[in-house]
Amino acid sequence: MAGICVIGGTRFFGKLLVRRLIDEGHQITLVTRGRAGDPFGSAVRRLHADVNQPGQLATAVKGERFDTVIHQACYTPNAALDACAAFGKRAGRFVLTSSMEVYNAETFRHQTPAPPMSAFAREDELRPEQGEYDAGLPWDDLDFVGRNYGEGKRQAESALVRNADVPVTVARVAHVLAAADDFTGRLRFHVDRARAGEPVTVHTRPGRTSLVHAPDVAAALSRAATSDLAGVVNVASPDPANVYDVCAAVDRATGRDTLVVERDSPGGDPALSPYSCATDFGMDTARAVSLGFDLAPVSRWLPEIARIAAQESS
Image (tube, rainbow, N blue to C red; front, side, top):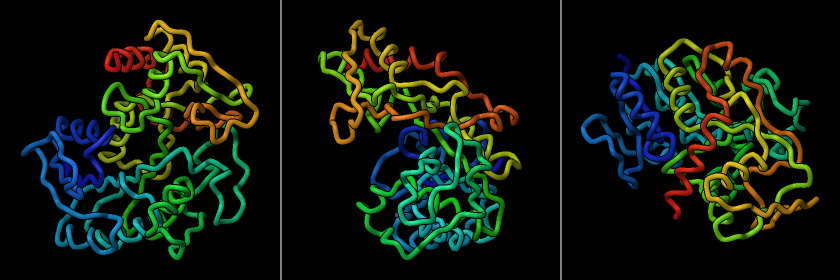
């Protein structure tokens, strides 16, 4: 049994992660702003802090010690540095939930040019310990953070890895899909348009990308939190998919035929699918497979969650 602090565990796959950790018998402390409820009752302790406000995390966790800190709300290098200062050596290890978007060459806007990376990038093609970060950028501006999500995550990785006093595991997570509680609305976008008979715009000859099922993300983060795994691991289903695969699953679930319109430059089109990529863009999962992570193929789980999403929207 471990004492685990989860920062950001009250929505989406964070809830699945916390529930899994509770069921595994760990002692869980949530750090939350307190703005959203959670379903865990007395099974967890709660500390209140807005981790985007400097110093609040340090105040909340003063004197606390944890075997692992799982940081799911670290979007900037400033937040990473704040976490390093707040916990110091009073955490056995950090697990940072990061994103596939760190590999996106278009997100290198305030740094050196993107390094060469494969279409399905390996972990060692982007090393946090070698990365740059700039705490002087306007990371306190939420609009700036939103526009620079990939870069913020990438810089957060580097800031944490280079400054933490304890080992760090970075979990780079693919596009997450879930049967319920999906605040992103990406799958619902497809279901709603199929039901309404509205077209979906995609890139011409769209590429494949990496998807992952929410429960598998929770399992991967739990594994990282309770083992001596260090470094970076890509968390994604082993079989990449393209937007036509998503449309096919939704069509089977709704009994409709989605009208797909290919465009060379669809940027800005409100009908553009969130799963459409101009070229192949995703993550290699060889390391995760070699480590024994249980990451189900897209073909196994996508039809079922599309069916559930269609039922909920009917």
